[in-house]
Length: 270
Length: 276
Image (cartoon, rainbow over all chains, first blue to last red; front, side):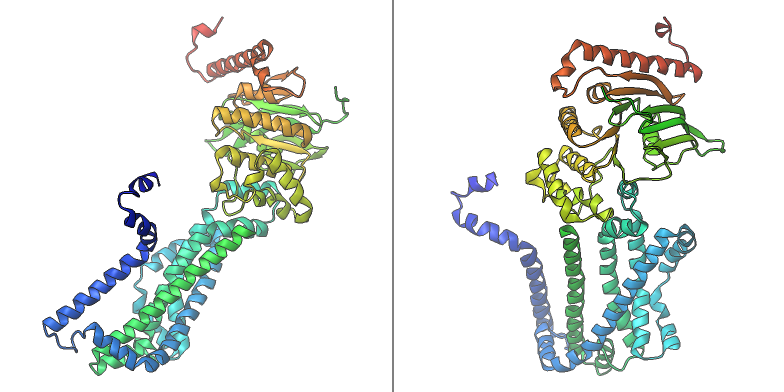
């Protein structure tokens, strides 16, 4: 603060612009980087005359995106819905199981080591099994997305619940709080940051799960559309679909982050 | 002088606590301790760290089980925590997402009493400890001393009959600690009824209490029960008086004596300068 005010008279214009620019820095820097990469991409592809089938220039991708936007949005809907459902299922099951593990030492000792080992399995390899069990409908993709994104929720929620300050629980006990009261008023809010960090991972994994499911079996969805475009060698369209997928991913992740802010703020107010 | 009651408010009879009882690494934390506290008395339990005084306090609060013996509060045997007993712990244990005021009101929520009826008294308590401007601040915005003041308010807001304090100011610096002691005495006159205060600071014990129990390690038992003669209210300057220092000296001697005896029992080499 003092350094700034000392420098102010010498470079007045910078002092006026400075604070604003510095605030925008976390937005400007990544955008500028992305813009530069796209520019280099465009220049390299044109200069080296790389065929569009191999790597289309960003401008052509943008044109494809614009031209096929209705189709892409049509396919974006099932992908988004399935991801959300898989994520919701994973969160509900994951947090419930974490609660059970926290309160039952027997369950913890029997399940927890197995969960950790199970997490090491490359779960993507199990996708065909879900088609065998649940068919090629949307349920199989939702189930697979939930299966893939379930583990980070359980593990981080269990860690969150068990890392609640022992002194806070002792305070509850001294006030004759019921188990339910100390869960709702102390354990749960203490675990919220951990639960949400698990949920953020789960959200991205759920989208991956749905796309893989769509690669295997679907008749709609962005995963299906990417496969369709690649079979016709329409590389620009693949990139356009990937761009839509990115937008979905960022929005859903942002929604979870926003939910975290709201929930944590509501706990602060009460 | 208070009227002598037929039944003391807190009664501790032949109480022992053995951890991992029956195993080769059993540890006797408290050994056959007996004392009683009449209603309205402020009693300090003084002893070196690790002597089992905190364990004793937690047993009185129903937060630890008793291995042998009997504890009764207000005439009935302790079977678990009670709402008529307030506990202050070594750390403030504030909930980080709640404001100071909401932390003070936390017991009211747990006890399902009407919040509106207690909001005013919670604010008054915060005002009493000089935190009226900080009622809406979160714990991380408060200093260590401020947090412990919020914890005092939280322990008093639901008007417990007995207040148990487990070295509540031991994590604070000496100046803040003196401030907190003065503040506690001030609040004490107005709010709480009976108090047990665990500490390893001799001066703190003498300044605060009506009566000091000296507890020692090995055997973890009470070796001295001393009544402090100073009238209340007690000014801070009382710590400067020769009488105050004489009492402190006496208590220190008692602690060292029993330490020495404990060492001999523990087969440690005797130090000749203490034998006289």
